[in-house]
Amino acid sequence: MNKKALLVSTLLLISAVGIAAVSFIKIKKNTASSPDELKQGDAIFPLGNNVNVRSTPNVEANNYIYYNYVGKIGVYLESVLGKDGFVWHKVRLDKPTGNHVEGYVRIDVVKKG
Image (cartoon, rainbow, N blue to C red):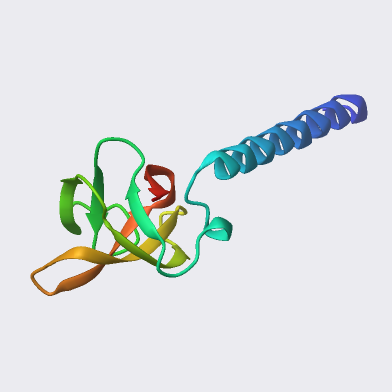
């Protein structure tokens, strides 16, 4: 690859990364539950009709506390980065079940109530 082609390829890659970053920021800003807008004790609700509540901050087949939960989930405690790369909100559940009084919901599927 000659220098001109390498330069063009590099500029295209930098542009693509920039567009992806701007898109992510827009998604984060449009998410009603972004960590910078929440404080401990804020009510958390599904963004749509329902949401899955999990015991750990990641998507695994066996970590459901609630599947398709409807209504107020609980109150916001903190936000964490899951090993799956998503931001998750840790919540104190309104309806504890079994030995679970806290759970995790992904940032893009919930809103502040």
